[in-house]
Length: 628
Image 1 (cartoon, rainbow, N blue to C red):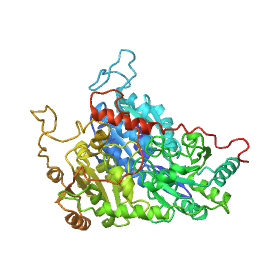
Image 2 (cartoon, one colour):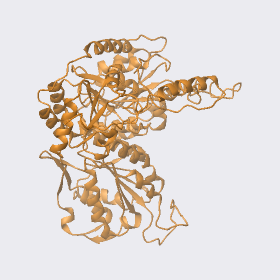
Image 3 (cartoon, one colour):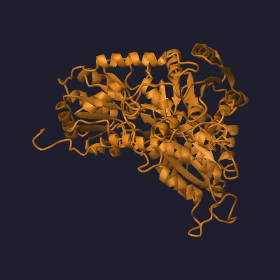
Image 4 (tube, helix red, strand yellow):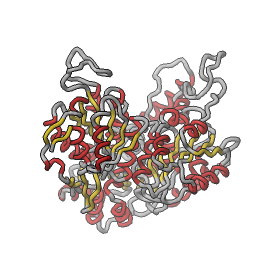
């Protein structure tokens, strides 16, 4: 079959499927793109021809920001438990490099996305072309080489003959539960338009099986022995519980053993908040209940977690001198952390096997009273009645109580992820969607777009602060043009609330974190508030807008937005200095060791106190004479 390279790419992608547990899905259900001189005559022409002729089914969606379309693709794939991955095409030079942040986010979060980055001329006939990077050290280097460290798979197709291997390699990694992330195929713009005779079998339906690795029996025995020795075990549920579809297995495990379950940002909802053994978020932004249990835990069972610094409170969360770890993870990189027993397996299969291996083992509930006291603190934070402006915790509380079980709240950066992990009561496994491995400002609206495309039956709430909104709001236009309804909650507090609070705690007095006029007297940006109207901006991008001032008005606005058929933004101003409950935990952000500011010197003393509690977690899981 004679096709251009771009036409072959489109035809191939449309015939790829994933399969797990006997259920098939379109692996690449669609393509986001922005066209420029690198791909308009290549992938652009191929997508148009496919649509006009009906020869290929690969829907195209016009994005407004290349980084945003990668974020939307990540939101889509995460909502589909990584069983599907969108493709993204961008033009040469800045068009493609705009996807770098999205690639970093996808790989850090272990979410599959396919990036078709346009590249320089393979023939070099017109070199240097517009936007080409020229280096004296080599003519085969382009800006797309920056994708190499950010991608789980990278290949550049210099010749048509190289395309089949590149495509098959890309699909392998997209469907690998342990090694997935951003996958980049760089396509020189002349090669995209070059014709080649392709074998018919390249375009046959191809089904990629997503495996469920089983735990090795000997390792399972060691893991069970360590857990059986525990007097105060704690399980940490990470995102891998969701991606494996291990929710029922997790509930069965905790019901059988009584072991309490804490959750990470990606793991929230793996066990619902009102389960007797659910103790809330863990770590720097977790609940005091989970963190108190973590300090005393003698065995920590990590399931599908990569143990980020927030999860471990920068390695201060677990203070038991003999604490040991059992790590159930499909990725050996994570299973090996903290010198734990490496139970390398699918989360669902591993939990099921552990439940059977621990038959008869059960621990008593020692946390119910602490959980009840914490629930009252959360209730108080949700109904603080802070004046004159409401507190952010009240906004989150109203959302939690009003949006409904089948809705999704989306967040990524600023102060809200911390407040959400600490306070949010997940009532459905898919209700909570916070991107926190990369904590990328600008993910909120773009990610919400992808989530809504993946789950059109759900209401999707993009919870965005003014800092993130000003960085990337363009995909409002995409949502409007595609008739995709989103509900945006724009929380205006005139600055970077999270970093402002962090700055103050580090003795830097919220320097550079306010959105203010420059003050002629101080020389700093601490003058009057800027007259920025984000509601009007959202309206100008095509959204309907509801402006509210009180929590009562906010609750009414949620009802109005639910009933709407178009993308709707709710704008509310909050007090960034309003109180928030303490997680009773810590996060390691170094403070200047020497300073002339008293505030910095005082912060350094506090830092050194916490720093002393850091641990390397090198205790062997099995010590001679201690366990069989």
